[in-house]
Image 1 (tube, rainbow, N blue to C red):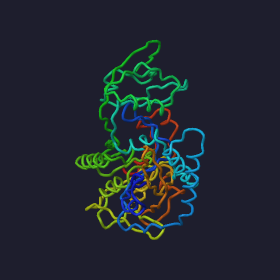
Image 2 (image 1 turned 180 degrees about the horizontal axis):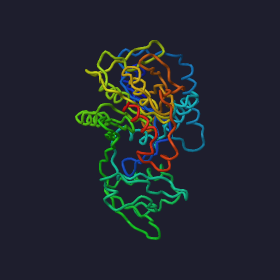
Image 3 (image 1 turned 90 degrees about the horizontal axis):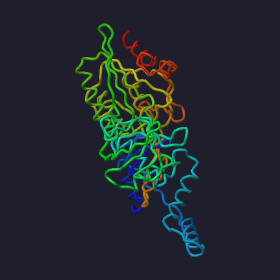
Image 4 (image 1 turned 30 degrees about the horizontal axis):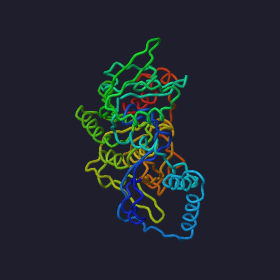
Length: 413
């Protein structure tokens, strides 16, 4: 979990009182935003607001600060080359954060900072194309988002991008390619691509791209009707999509529901709280928060508890917000968990924005399940453990998804 982004201007007291939880990134985010792409992202995240009852910040001796200022001034005055004072401070902050020996407390450089936010925003200004680096170290089109400008232009999966507005992109990483797109700042860009032995050019306009993080289906067998909702991430627009999807399924008179969060590495805590509240009335605790001084209980905001059977599909890629949802539905809604053990991430990070566009995040607290169980570093064990079959991995069809089929079978009993 992570907390509110901040600038370096507020003092310590102001920063704590303003803090909001944001998100945390477990693996490197590769999304090309404001421009071109949504590259595969793995982020373990959750978001909420920290209330006004935050513990009073501690104050420390000024001796260490005095020492830092002394060395800072010495470097600025005595180094023989040019020194950027802001870079010096930012690098010092990076050193402090990285010295904490915590995988979730990290410094995020300017070139990656914008990527850090995109998936969770649920939208970005770009072309609607996912890219990757292929085995030949070339920028290749991985997939196209349906209905957006890249697809409309005629760009195809497998096209190798060789130039951007006439400038070669040979040897660039996805991050470097993204940086070029941001520096470009044109509303319409020209991509030169190689398709087999043919060289083609596509002029593509940037537009607002909405990320669909919720998908639904209905499965029937005899008289049984099983609803299915897949959630890929808990982004800003996920709750609206989820609420509409659930209402649609319930109008179809489903008898039971499967919530699939396999591979869902997290999202905003406020969003997953809203999603859980669709299932439980306000008498139910949905998670607890532990800081250095106390443990507080967080309750559902809903007004009705669902009375149909629920199964949640989880795997090792289900983390943070996904684990919060899974544990809450298991402990408060008698849902069964099917799949493999979840990732095990429940610490909370606070995100701070620096003036140069970089960020850093540090762990400030931990969430517990509704019953007070610790899952950090442990994960959540499924009620029915079943590995995803090689048959599905090689041929991803619904009928080959043995975890999903097991869930359907259990709900039809």
